[in-house]
Length: 400
Image 1 (cartoon, one colour):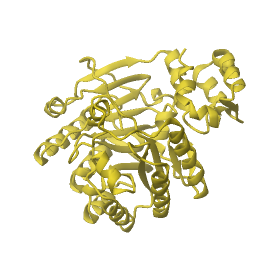
Image 2: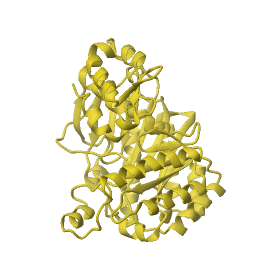
Image 3: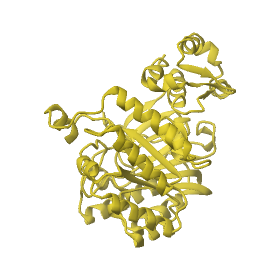
């Protein structure tokens, strides 16, 4: 999912050459679907409940943007596509199919491209899931969040554990062999035992990928209002939160899931290629209201207002347009790369920036190694277990 911040009304009107795409010949595509049946109590993403006729108007506007986008020439190869939201599965299979057809006409969707769609279990029955498969979706990301109905009700989720399992089984029956499930820990009133039970049941489903996130209470959400009013059960303390995190890695490792990013675990070869692209600086084009992009070293977002986006005749208004400096690119290389268990590569850093890690960050790296926060790898450096526990602190140090 993409977070956006609207600050102005600037229009980007430039064409990119394929060789400009951060040294690659391909791009990732993010498609934002800002609709849901009901907004969850913890959610601060761009999403809203809208009637079906407004959803259809949005789909038409999205297709117009795809057909008229100026950032990349027709035929630019795309190696991943990700439908995020909101709840993309709220759309019909026919609507997803039309969006995919427009993408194929404008871009060269590579034969082995990873094409993901986020799905709320309540919004997709067996027939719709089969339609998603026929439209070209080959990876589902299911927002399960908890294996306890009382926790789901607390979060404001619209599905039950039973409905989540039925949707998962329907996806398997439709032929999906690459499924992620999202889980959330550190919920108000959640015990360590409750979290361990959610992990155990999730592993029994045998998905290819598990994303395990700690709850963050975001400003402006119903959860934040309840928290500030003292109407939420206490959050797990820091020690329990850390215990949950360490147990998650150990338990999932015993079941064949390797942690490859701070909050993401996968069976061998099933890491999310789209999200890995974000963490390694791969260029991506965001399509849809509020969608963020990173092309030719420039970041920008589409206008976040859904009505304004829908009414645009071709290209939507661009906001937050910012061309990164070389220093900012180096910063992002470090603090995004350190999210990955593989860490950062000294050779790739030098190839990309023409300077060595030692020149730019040598003293800081040595200090973090001495503090037990970083360790050397064959390729470069990565966070230690201790460093992962305080990863925000470590990564902020790499802002020049």
